[in-house]
Amino acid sequence: MIGDKRALRRAMSSRRRMLSVERSEAAGRAVADLFLGESPLCGAERVALYVATSGELPTRPLFDLLRQRGVACSFPRSRADGGLEFFEVEDWDTLVPGRYGVSEPPPGAPRMLPIPGDVVVVPGLAFDHEGHRLGRGMGYYDRAFVEGPGGSPLLVGAAHGFQLVESVPHETHDRNMDAVVTEQGVSWTKERNS
Image (cartoon, rainbow, N blue to C red; front, side, top):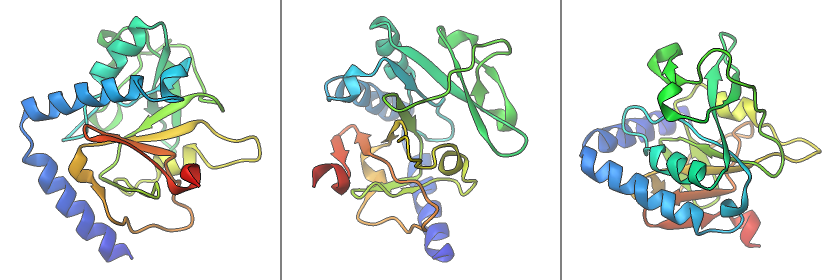
């Protein structure tokens, strides 16, 4: 299992590095348009996003469209203990360099814990149609959104089309996505489709 994950991480990282900036930005714009055309995603009043790094699908186009609609947006800030906290951001340009070089909300930004009814856009190296996700192996999002009795926010993977694969190696503690959006369309998990 661990070897399978490592091999898939290497393969996806390599493919992402080969993407041109223009193609990646075009995919980000396409995903933003698809996101806002898909119910229940387009009806969310609060959406948590990530700031793309090293080949991840850009979320700036989605942020801009959401803010134009008056949607409250938040971004994660990583804690030293490996946890994530989310804070509201009204202007992309206020994001500051954070831990591991990833941009994050500035000091003093209001905390905005994602709750049931919210949407969380999640990065990943690979996703499959059952909602399994392969991240970087740190478990930040898996720990942040453990399924509880009160439910959880809607978790939506955002990726380039080639990152949606037949099967992602997974373990019981891995948190599934409710949907995956690529420039080629929206793929809801089997749980939602059944």
